[in-house]
Length: 169
Image (cartoon, rainbow, N blue to C red):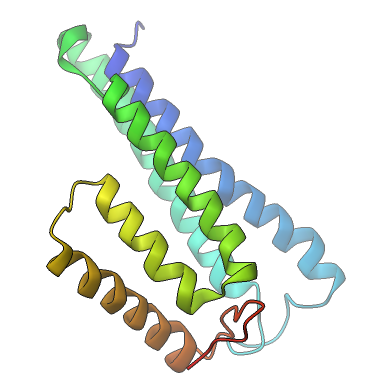
């Protein structure tokens, strides 16, 4: 079985999505057990939500891998090697820029807090993805931040990082 360039890229992406799920399941099976955070009902069980998401992510990745393999056996290498541009230079630059912004966002959470770092990071992501209208960029970044805050901070009662300045709603 000879995989096309597109199939190899799809398999690589699927395996990359499997890594955080496997790491999360490992953490749940070790550190959560040590701290006795894996028992109890849905409200007391800190491992329940990550476990559900990890299993779902693994199922989706395995489904994608199986689909690529089945498609390769059925169709062979029909597509042109030139027809797939996942790793074109512009795509690599955007991916690298988004990775850097994400790392800066994680670092910014500790210093600036969720309420300051999130709209800045979202605005940067939207700019990288091509949104150039400032009248759309600012409300979209702030609105998304408020929606995340409401979902996690209010409905799910998750304590969001306040940073060194202690900013919170």
